[in-house]
Length: 308
Image (cartoon, rainbow, N blue to C red; front, side):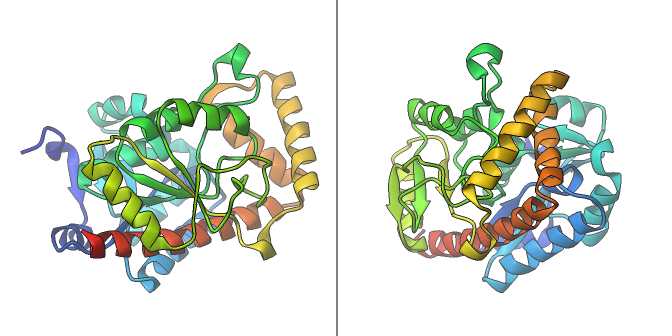
């Protein structure tokens, strides 16, 4: 038995798929508890799972409940997370042992979802956007644990690029230093979450899910540890105007600085403030880009299993 198995509960449907080399897509739970209000959060989570099923894969939403690492949640568990909201601890790598030992509930971030997905043997994970290097990090050293996890854990993260509240240039530098490839799906430019534009290029453009799957297999077959960022631009019809969102972000960042909001409290504050500034359209964009990433992740997972 692996050291982590005594803490791990894999839903029967997910376990069966993994045993039979069928495609599985991991999903985080912070987006449910901290990303949007109830019941919209639960409805969105259910829709994401539905999209993954419709595209031929099995969804595995990940969380920690009563100190157990859960891979695949049922409807009651999803609803519980949605209603509990921010009372559930936002859980990254450093938090996992304490959430387990105290038998608490934890909503997983990108980093902790990657870890638990890796324990279960899941290779593809769909999320909204990855964390990164925060603006002003040269003074604050505020760098998301997501980046360090991407350099160590063998899971591909399908996302709409880095969250646009970050310093995207420094985020890309950090990923390069740690050997994490940034792949643009049908794009030469890294998307910036709400918008298809960022002004920064990707390492490689790949236009078909099978090409991404082949690259993942080659990377991990060679023992090159760490993940891959698969940057999937938000659909054109839901993309926000680059100048509008940039101005909203700058105003939100300025307010966060004035209020002394730092660390893991900064991202939910900034996203909430941007939603307020943009009249709620940023939340609509957020939901649509997650749906879009779920579709692509399912396609990549299918091709990965076919090739393996």
